[in-house]
Length: 144
Image 1 (cartoon, rainbow, N blue to C red):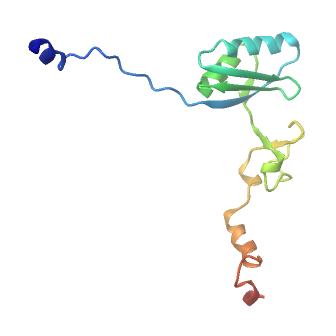
Image 2 (image 1 turned 90 degrees about the horizontal axis):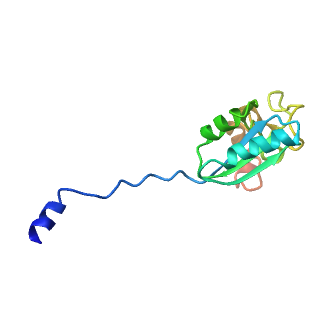
Image 3 (image 1 turned 30 degrees about the vertical axis):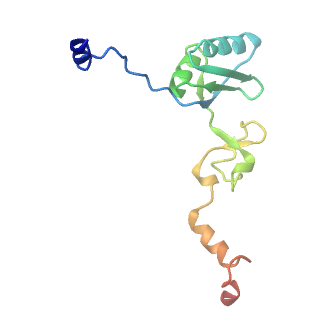
């Protein structure tokens, strides 16, 4: 048995383990008009490996896929149904500092959402000015 142990050190039979994709949620904007469109999109995505949950909201034209998937593969799979699809371009209204900026406000956005643009988020330099006159700043009285 000594010879087999010696040779087994040089020859390994173990297979390399695949790195598992992280669990993520992919949101896609897809124009769906009827139940058939909704069913076709749902079936194409739910048959992918690693998909745990698929939510389709026809009113918002939104498909949410949760699972161990690659977001680009999910987009390609939805586009393979013949529908025009893109990643969800909107963010919730209450997460944005300036929702009425011209680049962020969109009439076509579902209610409660605005476009996800950099202009909608606060400028880091503005925070310094507002903290000068804050009650939390002990030197605020000295400035006034």
